[in-house]
Image 1 (cartoon, rainbow, N blue to C red):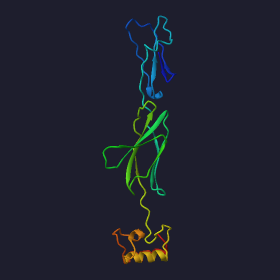
Image 2: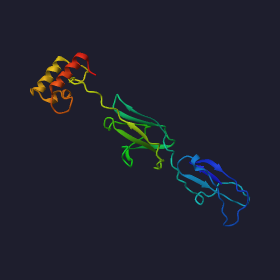
Image 3: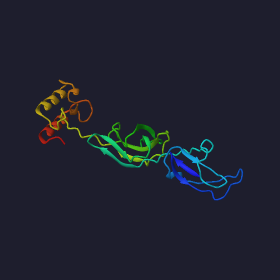
Image 4: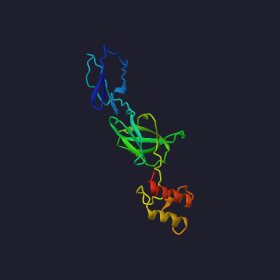
Amino acid sequence: MRLRAQGEVVAEQRIDRTLAVAEGAELVFDVREHPAGSQEWIVTVDEDNTIAESNKDNNLQRVPLRPEAPVVTGYTANEATGEIVVEWLPVLRARQYRVYRKSPVSSSFELWTVTTETEVRDARVAEAEQMVYRVTAVDTAGRESEPSSSVVVTSPPAAPTCTGDCDGNDAVTIDELLLGVNIALELRMLRDCSVFDATGDRAVTVDEILLAVSNALNGCP
């Protein structure tokens, strides 16, 4: 008996005696060592008990195998971009990878994205939010592996806002302080420099003007 995996003989065993009519033979292989895809059993039994190619039309059995589960090698929160990055090792003969995610309180994963790369970047997560990820490999026949181990990642917190820094250059100028005063007096709209509203109450108070002055004198935090 021979077992072929995608054209390559990966296992072979000789039958040590002549089988009677209607008598069968049993051969056990550990398919985990074979590549994913269709496997061909090539079986022959003749009076000389020799191994030769049998009729493939009569002796063909296809054994569907699943690809190995991906191994996650890294998961980080990129503070510079605000993204969550998940990386894994490539899987042999994988055509694509499916990435699933869920919140820690959710009971089930949902398919988030499909990729041919071995890395994903998730920018659609709220600040300081936890997400759970796992990855599967899909081969050319569409068979999906078992999922990788789950990883829990916390997205980066929001960058601190510098009250009074209207143009985002990490400094508060005299012109920006004057703009803040005009917003407090309702001579200008809050949308002209929303960072003066440190408390989020849609108004600029004396305390927020004083905070902006402190940032102008001492630098942004």
